[in-house]
Image 1: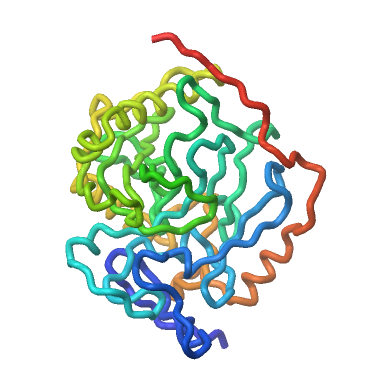
Image 2 (image 1 turned 90 degrees about the vertical axis):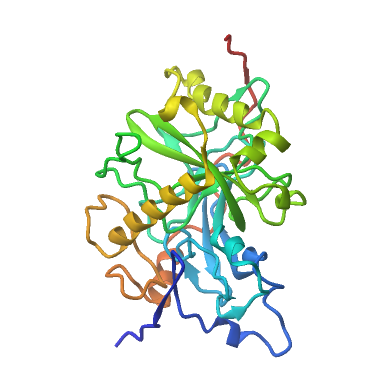
Length: 341
């Protein structure tokens, strides 16, 4: 009979009680505190980058395969990380400390994303009509202008109308734009502070965009709310609005629209949206709503009906090709688009 670990609810993030720390060799540290999230997660590539078969799977510190969508906690625990005590910090600091899964590094073009409809939800490059997707360079911006990714354990329910936008969700984890100075890597898991939020309306669906900063950024202490972005990074929010407004125009699509006339809402508003999408995710994982094609296979949410064993997770990954193929091994040629006002 399957042995289930007790499920601990820490803040908004659900995690399984993890014995991983006990498995570390004596005298070895798993990381110096709450700002070393990636120390607890590793990635494994399958297939060749820039090919339709490429997948990036996630492992926890014990080397077991996990889902970045469902098994990485949303909130960073204020007392421990994977069972390991962390440095003390102000309560208000931890209330605003979240895990971010980086999908797209800044200045790159490949549209990488968590594969929500595949078991264990690896990161893959999105395709359309059989072709790999890249975002266009719209002058003066090269690719994505932030480190782009998702908040784990969130879900924008496509059957639930948001009361503030009057539109349903886009069926994905909530997106996040990290505005720090460092260019991050695909698959990194970092700790971020939430600063604000933008409500993009994409083909009639609500597609929230969280604005956040890496807590390890040299200037992170300056940023507490959305007004600090205006103060210390003037022009960045305007560039963000324009990026999301125009990024589909080179594909022949119309400009995107926004709720609130394109106004960035503050941290308090953003935290309420995150809380709501986390509640939607919980109903999804407990099979209390229609998740459609979303794959909820997980290793650590032990009272979920979609829970699987470590052996089952390993079998899932082993079915995915690990050998290089004849797909592209470099990004497509760069084309620049110049759009009039």
